[in-house]
Image (cartoon, rainbow, N blue to C red; front, side):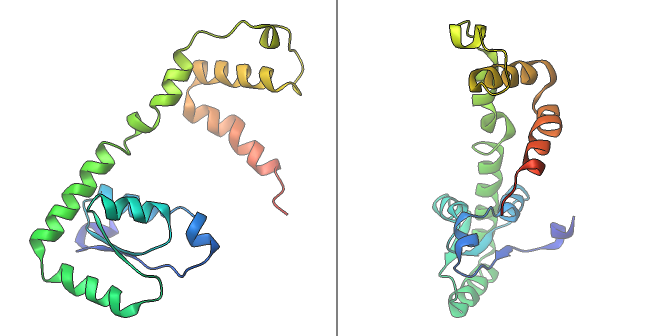
Length: 161
């Protein structure tokens, strides 16, 4: 990949709404690849990665702090290796697909509820019917197919105006 020769991953965001609520998937990728990281504060994942020792957090808009973090990592290869290993471990453990999907698997393993709301609901406007139908579809076809066939079309039909 493009990151194979990188010494660290850097993420610089300005302080704005998108920074506060947006995903920083590149940070997950940097961690998975074992890169130490430098990022400006703002996104929730930045705080989590900083607390886990995989990322140096700098104030948004503070170029001197970012430069100092780059120099600090450039001068401390042992620290870089430790941060990279911590990132790899975090992604293989807490953020692994098995860990993240455990609640979905547990939900799918439950026996279907046979209460009156689900038993007697036959129209698509009933939320209990939709939940039961989604659960049965997931059980039969798996998460990937569920997202492709049901979730993506729902998102396309939704207006964000």
